[in-house]
Length: 347
Image (cartoon, rainbow, N blue to C red; front, side):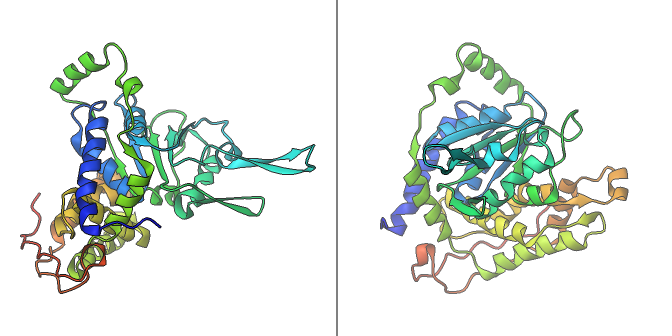
């Protein structure tokens, strides 16, 4: 196993991620917060769901992120006639060997782009469940490990669009975060006409980071310190979704784990060896909202899951106590710097 200095790895993380960020932003203009969230999910070992109307750059964002990293990339175009075996693979009878030979599917890549995931049937969507959670595929009773790092970047149109199948709750829960690209500003759209008016910048995009660098950075993010009050804050936020009167389905314990991992990655991207309540707050909507199901009355009142999460953030007290002496970044024995006292979040 490769050894490296944990103190230096945080500096390396900032430098490598900055290169990737600049590479992706060269293709996706005017959306720095979307690019940052994508990198946060990558370093937190999660999967990203990009949901928006057609034509705003969902697939381009996924491709730009994948091409900026020197690793294996496969793209799956989800259609109503797509079969589960097209994703996971299939065992084929070999006449010469007189035995079955496994032919890997498109899921066997380090970055898998699932374009318009909600256009496939629920049966086909379920083929991703095992791979996204356990990072393995089981075919004919035999288990095959997936490469590392492994990330699924899926795009989907809103469920109101014709010819789509809503993602089941179990599928949505496996995505760490959901992001909407949104329409660009007028300035960004003018810049897009200049950049994309001729040759697509994706054609000239070259990798700026290697897969082994991403693995080292993921390991560094795991060592980010999270104080007990910050952990309790995340648990309280998620727990509040399970008792809110406007929700018939709250967030799962997996959502709590995803929120904590994303907060650690966000702290590392900010150059900190410890997570703040601000990291949890900033990611709560992206990590929790897509897992929640509003009640029928809330839908009649046009209450969205995002609005409910914002309300919970406003009502939940923010911890202000300084963390105690614990192992710091990378397991080093030192006190994590005290996070500043913060007033409750105001919307």
